[in-house]
Image (cartoon, rainbow, N blue to C red; front, side, top):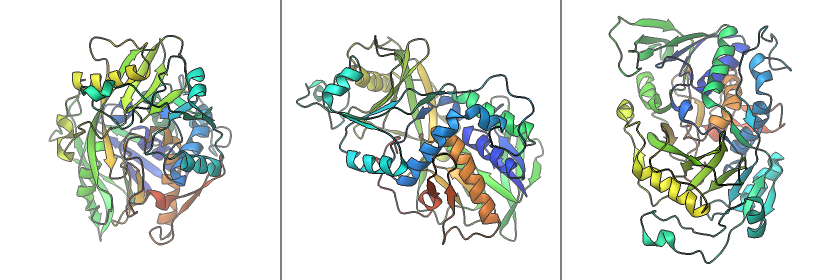
Length: 450
């Protein structure tokens, strides 16, 4: 079987590697000049486990162990491949295992989170407000829910109650998201996967209703404009759409999507960098839906601050055919929104005078849960709608997608009897129907937290 994977981000490269390890021929197409140069490069690479469904929790927990053994996973040692790579790579991304704190918030039930963690076998602690203040030096433990615009007078109202948190000693962040994608890609390439960069998908060919090839043309050096180079057809038995914010356009080319119950739409997002408040470095990662941010420490005394899409803020949705026109410059409005909320939580924070950080575009599904599935077009598969929260699951996503494709191509009727992936590290069984294109909308937090 020959598979064409569209998208060389961290998930696309992971899928390509695992398909190859199952013995399939694989070609990867990407518009950029190297792996991981799209949405992956703007990721905060947070590793956490608090999702709203068991299978999402289980996937993140399994992926945690894979990040812990990332070098072995990439090199194919320790049982990850029948044919380990003969030469290791020079540099590897790694997991900064700092722990994770999730502050209490009404939209995420602690009882439900604890039940899911117990079922998955994830250790955790319940912190009251005093423990939170002891363990997170410099934190203001005030409860400020509901979210408020930072320019409103109400934003600065004093809290009348305090909150606690759920803490897991496991979790943290991956040191370098771009390097992680390139590690996956380099391993895949050395195992025989072909990568074609600066390529635009011009069309998807079908024969008797089934995909049979992908038509590509060259992109310019910036990856912005497709050039009229005559085109090339790459024959394929299977096509996997992992195109991130461009995924809807790829679906349209394939004629897929008419039976999706989930809508997909790109979302522009910013993450900003500030100095870490004294004494909290390195500190655990923290999710603060109470105020509307997530934060993680980084090297050199920095903190990355991202948003959790507070309902009071105007989100920057993008039309699928306008992704290339998105403003990739940081804005004062979003900078103030995120950093002021962080400073409310950590009053000692030092806020820079000008925005410093990154801009990315998420591929968001209606319920902020990814679609890892087949489609109604035979041979056409999707790993899309990752909603800004799936970097952490890239190792596991590669495995479940390769398993799903393998099973469906052998005759499994996934729509009527869901394929199940048996985790090798955490021992959970993941029902892949949770990530179906035809699922009922999951009752999630409605944010990047999933």
